Image (cartoon, rainbow, N blue to C red; front, side):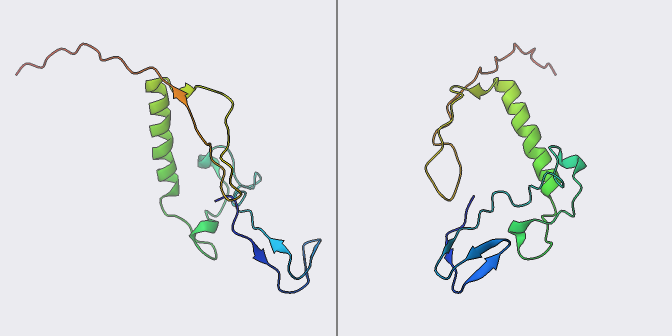
Length: 124
């Protein structure tokens, strides 16, 4: 989810430099959480963080298999894209209308199936 459902301020307050009045709707956008470019790089191998993650609860909790999991997915997706010659059929992506999530309404792709090679039978 990119944004959480709205909450409403029960009293007047200041958040950072913004004045919030009682009754104002506040929508927390968590899509940017854990994506500080000063901490995160394009390559997780060279990440300079404490591995804490917002979605695992309060405080510095971390998924113990995040790096191996991402590596497995990265290799699987890259292999699939290479083997199938996977590409977008239409470069104009239409996003689904949602205030909470960001995802493509449709994602049409084209691919070239891998040809079966003639295999030499194994003789015992």
